[in-house]
Length: 294
Image 1 (cartoon, rainbow, N blue to C red):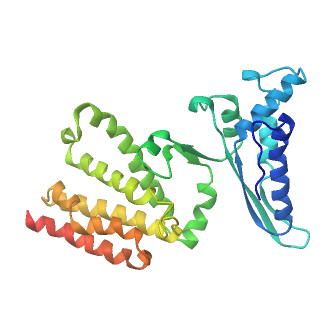
Image 2 (cartoon, rainbow, N blue to C red):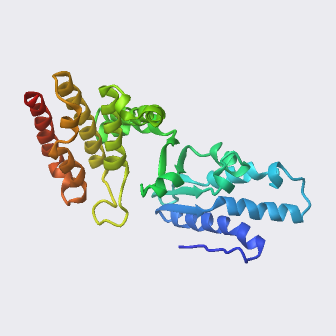
Image 3 (cartoon, rainbow, N blue to C red):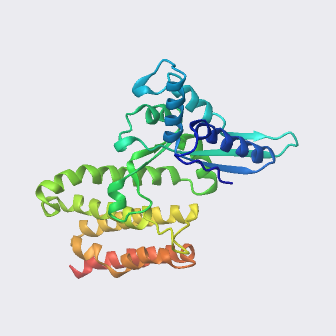
């Protein structure tokens, strides 16, 4: 179902469209469906509210928005959730709200009012989009407040060490961000080899784990079990590379092994989840062989 409103429609219609969408979502939720609602964008909805408030000569708040802006945003997101219907079925509404702040400034009232309510934030990054990195979600600005609630589910259904693996992956990306400041000043060659390896592992996370091709039949979707195996493959590469370099292997020899490239390209093939573990074993063996070569 699509509820469309354009800028040439009456301002009251633009303001009501969000409520129309959430009401239809609740209708299907009460029928026992799991509904996803995409509101694009709540910034335009807030602008319609600001225009109506101005015409009613209400007391303006920050940047001319009505003083009740935050409460209206909260009331909208509070209508999301899971319910038990009258006939005993389960239904849910998941709300994904897009905020389009002018100039990308998330300190403006609509962004701040939204961030105070929601528990998940995906920060889209124009720089990543220009680099053709999709989905262009900035992993440093984005966050979720649900991991503690979901950790036990991940342990029971995916793997006992799933939360720890997720934390390690996030930590490596954070370290890469800190090292990039040094790299921009003196270049990566000036870094110690262990930090150069960290940069390579982080690049592997970005290009192999985070980047997806939405137009590819296989890569457009990734099962949660495959996500875990891919993350473990990256950490396995890091551990094997550290051991090999401690034994005298050269960084270039370790990162340029053929099986690492095969592992990264394999995600485009059907049945990748069935062969990824054997590919990791081959990669580990090749990394160990670099010690003997040196």
